Length: 428
Image 1: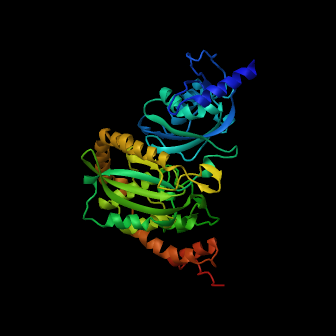
Image 2: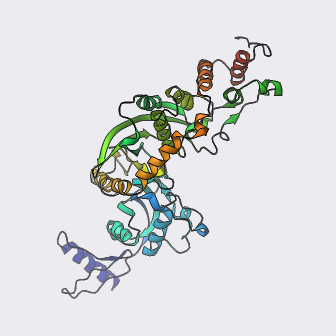
């Protein structure tokens, strides 16, 4: 009898006209064909399948994408996705609350208030083959209106979104009136940021100093009293290699949303540190407002000294991908990138949802207030920028010399700054 039902189901499905629909309830196929007088076939067998999802969202109401401990009740994108998949029946009750048990992986992480046009998530979900095509529709019925699943596809068992990462492109929108069009220093600051960098000044400001690695070098109290902060940093710390990054491009263009004008910054790279984009934009704005001099940008991103940087608001930041740089979607002959049709869905969501959310939210007024506070921030203004630039110019040629050991580099610097107390190290 079961074989008969399967054969009849196959016959009915093969005779369906193009464009006809097959209702899906929690992944179960329910062909309703009353005229044919055939029995309804329910509970099509499910099995675990590794699926990849393209997820787009407005991050204003969430504390980032990464799920937090359940007892905290913190709203996150992953929390909403997990609850939705559980309600549909794609996650067993024994696995609910433990994303690691279903092999959950994401292509990138966004922080609180940040938007995304298409983050890739992958997981092993309980589904039958026929339910995959309607999973985005089923999920979007249950998800909050500011989270959308744009596409779903089966992928090989070993496929993980995290390890299939491609170039990331972030966009940041700045109200046009906040940057002087005729002032060129902030454009030069953008160019100074391109290339290999150590972003210890462009990561979480609360832990920037803690992330630096102490060097085995001891100074007396008398020597310390004669050195300024920039000198002590150069002597005592080396740059944290885990914060080495390559910033491939930084560009800007004018852009309008519903008659509101913005600068649209695009920053491209393969990996970014926590808060890096917002700090980079903050420095560009500070240079444009004459709060931070242009000459300090290179020492900030190339040198070891700790320099305070302003953190731009999160509401203008969104994660996107440039054309042709999506993660590998399927294995096959060569590289098969995410189809152009799905890229078009990502762009449509960005243009029609995220951009308009940024424009009609309180972001513009908040950004203007933030810029006024930055211009009057005494903690930024009290930094000795001249000394930072001078010490960087002394440090850079020594750092570039591969024959000098790290300790010898510090001894060389100390010999320059305190020549009467320390002998200049030999060249061999």
